Image 1 (cartoon, rainbow, N blue to C red):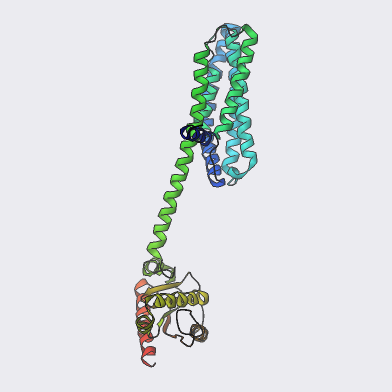
Image 2 (cartoon, one colour):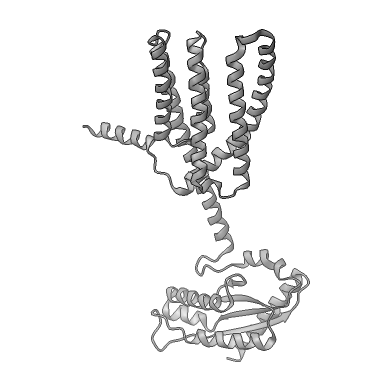
Length: 367
């Protein structure tokens, strides 16, 4: 077998048996649920109207319209059943992950297919055009996205049953095999293509969302430390207004010396270790890399003694840090300044940050 033939077989197999993640499978089920919900009520109304019209015809013209009347009664019953089920799906947020949902969709297919087989066979026996079966299969191809291999198999099963019934009636005397076979092939092809397109759309949307989330994160978080940055701080300003808070500004003592002596890689490792201790003690939600080696922490609902004790313990933890990029005896320390209050506006909070920054430099001047 040539390489081109192997690639062709592999591609065909990939069409029929695509690899689908659990998330994508559930998203496809949610799409099916939405389509079924939106269409079922409309078709219930239409078939009910037709049922009334053919009921009048049957009452006035007799048995001539009995098949149509019977078919519409079954059709209205099926759409009523679908409407009830789709409303239950709508109320259940976990419906897409339940096996019962897939089983019900499968039941709907076989109920409508069974109806289509019987009606088409009766129409064939009566010498009429048998479009119902094709309509049912094309309708499901458009409205319900089915895994390709299983979708093709169930279409072949449905049409085979209909062919057997017609063969037993008159040996398929009025069937054009080419036209009939072409219709089956087209519907099977449509099922495969529809699933592939839906799957690609889902994956594309997921990639776009992931990329957008990545952009949003990178715009509001520092690339080196992973902490929130000043952009995120501006967005969070309003959440601190009206609350009792302590604004803490801190930095690494003599950071430039470490950079100049041991290199920028050592400086980056110091900032990472420093940031880790900040988030360990003060959490990730209200801590920010303010710029350079400066970090901002906002602490809520504690007393002045509590914030003072917390900062001393944290500063001691900073002094205990040892890094492989620094000599064993080399450590680093930090300075900080803090300001407390209940800012009523973003402007007041900015003033508290400025005041904390001034107190930071007062502490640094004493070292």
